[in-house]
Image 1 (tube, rainbow, N blue to C red):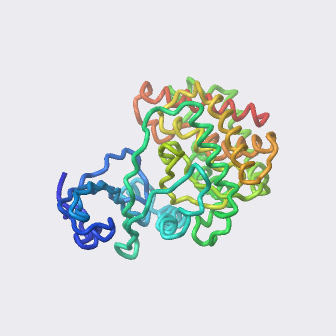
Image 2 (tube, rainbow, N blue to C red; image 1 turned 135 degrees about the vertical axis):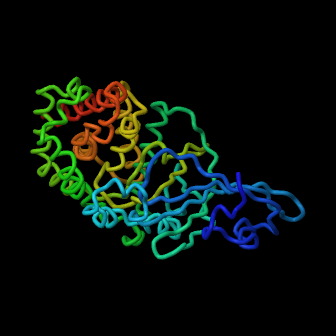
Image 3 (cartoon, rainbow, N blue to C red; image 1 turned 90 degrees about the vertical axis):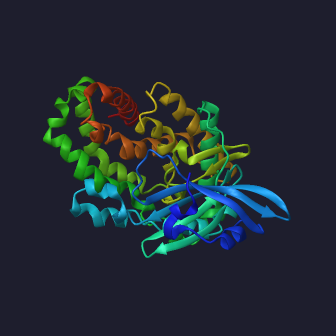
Length: 369
């Protein structure tokens, strides 16, 4: 741990920090880097700021989470991306969405079972970055079971159908939401995955060859051919509220439900949008072998539909399943081959390829492809 000088221009003076905490003064404080293994282009530094404040003569411990939200152009990871894609990526990742969420009254509009961290301070660092001083949320980090997935899906369904959230100013949310599937397909999937598949070399990788036989490759290419019509179908679905990145690591388990973090992709999007990340992200992060995927998917569909109904949105079971399957196919099915990991030893990537190919087969079966 170090002193608050580690925060640089993000730091505030003791008087401001005490005011943020509704305290009389700050007795002591320290900073610790957050150990976070995932790369996020629009997130810069992350810190824990903790210490002791004085209020009415008593010592009060505090702990805050501080992070910098920034233009994607500032991310060191952009060095690994061809320069011709930089501006396109930055435009697709408007970094101000998350600060907007915390500046808004979203926290008092979210439905039962959901809350968002308290924002103590939201302040620009410069023209292309903003610092968020947030509540450090105490949460249950135990592994998720099926009941937890169902509860999370129900919460996301209530959020999706919330009229209170839908009434917020649309400019606060991600502008690409309604066309997200189309933009993702026409940009990243076409430029990266589809062109790689068509070149053909990827199919000779030992791990890929072991799990993507000729039949499965043909079915994957059939999905790609069908994608434009499937996207047309998605864009005819009802638009509802979506968190945009509803992976379990962003849904912190608290006693009365979930504290939902990372609001950079909050948007209006198609029915069932959040279900894709909820059910697939552990596979995407190589934390699941897909053996429980069908069970997770089944309970999540039930929970989401229950949540929608609680918000007054009645959707048929078959309609929701179809919406979810198409969006899962576009968001994760086409990108089933983990191109970013194929430089690893084949034995190290084999489990990832196996899990993704398993889910791809489920998706193709559900689509009749």
